[in-house]
Length: 84
Image (cartoon, rainbow, N blue to C red):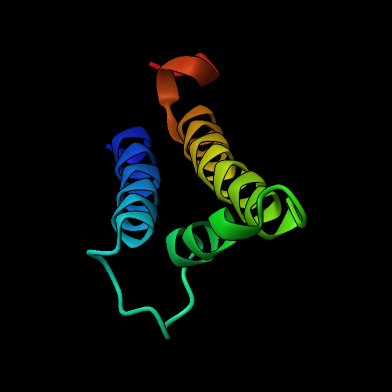
């Protein structure tokens, strides 16, 4: 259950970012990773960091959520601790 929750959490973050990138998520004046990456598309040749760093932090956040879920599973699963 814990690992599923962390996967769903990462999926929710990616879904919100994808919808924001496509313009069907939160309004433009509300900052989100998708909106920031979408606004950085126009400047990708001159100022790549406007889209690059939010994309990196988006990926790192999803990866960290999955690592936390996996770590909690390792700590809380009695089968991995050798208990019956």
